[in-house]
Image (cartoon, rainbow over all chains, first blue to last red; front, side, top):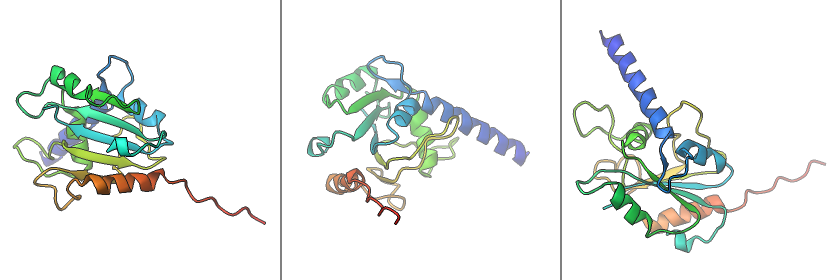
Length: 53
Length: 134
């Protein structure tokens, strides 16, 4: 039972990671966040997570 | 802070996510408009997928039942050159990070803009060149 729970948690984490990579820009361009991150891989990058209000 | 960092090679992603009751896409657009720096790309994480995934990467403690880690927000992550985000993998751990969370004091320092700027400048400095082999 515990193993089933761990597998479910791992699958959930994988799904969430995939969704995180697909976060897209506000301006409507389709460049997922992971692509943006990789395109700038040879530069220092700041990643800020912010509440808008 | 970015205004005090004129380096052209710096890139920044501002990821807006709903945390507080009035947070929505319109509010995110309004906030993003206040930061028109061309080095910044603004993202919307409406499902908080990145927030949860980074919460796991950063080992933030859970605040609510049903979660095995906390949500990353009010977080400021700095990545050195060469850090990669592998396909199908969670977001990578930052080279340095700060936050404004009450329950992450043991994990990383509280936000101090001067310190974050200093650490960013450290990563912007050119890498030392190796002496040519004789």
